[in-house]
Length: 438
Image 1 (cartoon, helix red, strand yellow):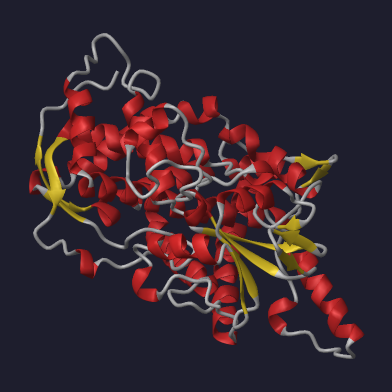
Image 2 (tube, rainbow, N blue to C red):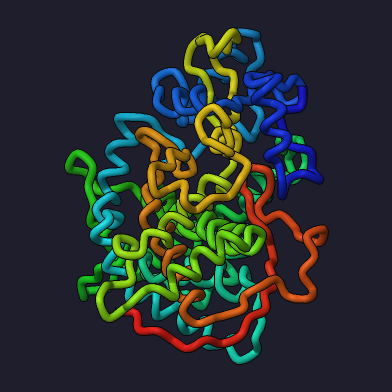
């Protein structure tokens, strides 16, 4: 059974998910040899149970190699030789040690202090297009904003962002696909290795410059060089894994979040009108324009995370034979857990197929940032960036809508089957009077 949305439904996979939840909530894909899990409760349980459902694919490689030796096969395919462990691909206790190294840089208080700088960057990008009365939201704002922020946090030149984008496009494109096949061919492996080598060379040069620098720096790479696990400095490979993960994960999902948020608000004009009404009634002289005093902003971001989750799926593998529902999952078998489906599960979310920013005023228990020990470390940063974008757009622009050249049928997915977003989103607007952001 095919557990992947058809290629022509990547921008609207939710009807496919609904059918799978109803008729095949736990299904095995014989072609790709992987299970698909579609229900909220099953997915939440898998994300919670790291002992039975592992993220450490080096363990899977070791298991597969053991099986091959038992079968008298001494040659292991080149693609299985090495899996670099990172926050995303590790289990406790190593995962906990890695997370503790970087977690202080992503606390809510630490991230909140970045708001003025994020606002400054966002204003600067809007300044370039506001007089034109139109922009491509993705290329003019949704992409350059988060990549600039994460580059500054890492202490690397934001001017290299075209290179970063190419790496993201190629690296993610080599590990996901716009078709229903999981790429396992040698070409995908070659692309993956080439891009990883390019990134390693780039960051090794940065790391060497930091080591030679006598003046103390507070950027993330400098902090990684000073960090220790059990009294030992991080190995170079561990630092490289951190850098690559922070650069890619630090912007790819946020690009989708910002694009999906504006797209959803324009497709549901009653929701945008609600935001505008609250905006017009808002008095910045009495309150700060933040999520605490302007809850409709954070609620709109939260509902976007549920309705159009930037990350649609994650992969785990079973560390032993387990049963989910009435299906037996064998040790070593992989599972795709469809977060995008879980977040539309009608047994959890009322009127789940509707975009409703009021949903979060009570509780929006979406799984867009994961769950359990792998809950997204950068969730606060992604949410803040999306909030800043929405606040500033409401402040500085009026009559925002899809541009004349916008056609839904010409939209193209960004980053393949595991992600949900568009590569372009042309908008038109008029400049509005600027309100103080104090």
